Image 1 (cartoon, helix red, strand yellow):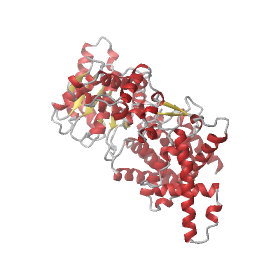
Image 2 (cartoon, one colour):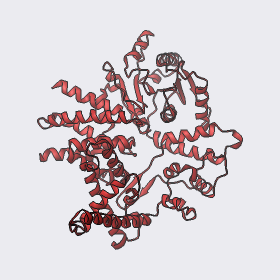
Image 3 (tube, one colour):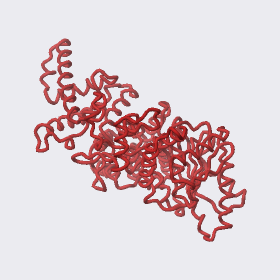
Image 4 (cartoon, one colour):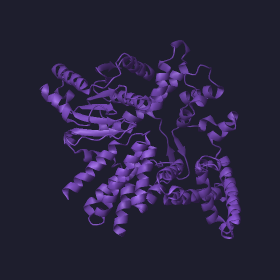
Length: 563
């Protein structure tokens, strides 16, 4: 039995380390296949022994942790993959998770949804593209029922409830139902047929031959289209106004910063060669002086949005690369506001640590993961006793001091200036770690506080294409230099193209693994007690143990009691 426990722990560690945004379908398929094999084996073991249930609970909690923007890492696609696999292996758990994405289930803290109605469409598309059953996969049927039940409820609420004609008392499900003539018209037809079967079943049941059924389906789609269209007009979404070029009727106060970032040319116009439009100028003034919300309020809960680090750093680099004479002060101010909001939300509960970020700037790091890694490195440097210092790692490592300014545009500019002067070849983490050793030894000699470098962490932010996820080479260097101050080595996976394996010889008690572009891991990192010598598996269990995700493990307990 012990080898099975080790196997499940290793699989959980591996999956957790892959939870970073992927742009490679083969890599996503690899994750799906490996998780499917793990859950299939786990299903046979859970049926005979409760000692394997904790592994099922942790994997199930991964759905909420991976999708959640508030206390999780906000990775949509991978959360859809995990949920899809759960549906295939544990259908009841998969159906429950679908409901949890769009319904408030936790009594803990703010009532934020885990996901949104857009997830429903995207999961259907994933199943359609990756299942041999195509549009007939049963998860699409269940999602259709969830979507249409909410659509009917919204239609009733809008017309006949005590809160009629109130946008906050209906969902935005109509916004994310695909249109009939779009690339996903097949899904529209599936939804239309499901809706008509439950609202007006006689339209289809009275069809007696292929021709009459075809006409019945056309009628069903026409009726369904009217319902969806009318509710979408009721929502009065920003996208509808923009498509209709009805800019004068936009309520800028109701537009979140996330919407503004996603529609950046319209609302922010960062570093454009032309003057700001009236909308961009008004929105930036409003955001800078009054503040914009990150929460969309609905009747039974809230939708929480978070600006990604990638977008903020991208805007900062865009301003850095522009001639100073043409940069608008309002652009610098809005980028700094976006950064300061993230900074305060990220580190307000973080303990000060001795953290040394090692930023991989080699040629393998591309646009998205490089920009995200830069942002995370800067955030980590703010929580470190080595205030605002990071090491850029290429053929030769270089210290970068960011303490001379609090302006994120200037800080990013300093990083990019250093990167441009480097070779951009392969990362030499061995040389970077030796640089850390010399720095720690120097601090020990000159520090008046002996505990200044105790319990410190070295954080490697990389795609790990040229350095193994193994602590052994790190500690060999420390022993070679006769250094007594052994750190906790943190491997932060930023690889968006390949799956990265964890070396079997890794010292689990002195290592941590993190992944993804979310700043939420910084809280987990800063508050991790590395003196406790927990295993990697126990650290991961702790990271997904937030009460917000209890609804998933509680449901597993209920199912076990029933069966």
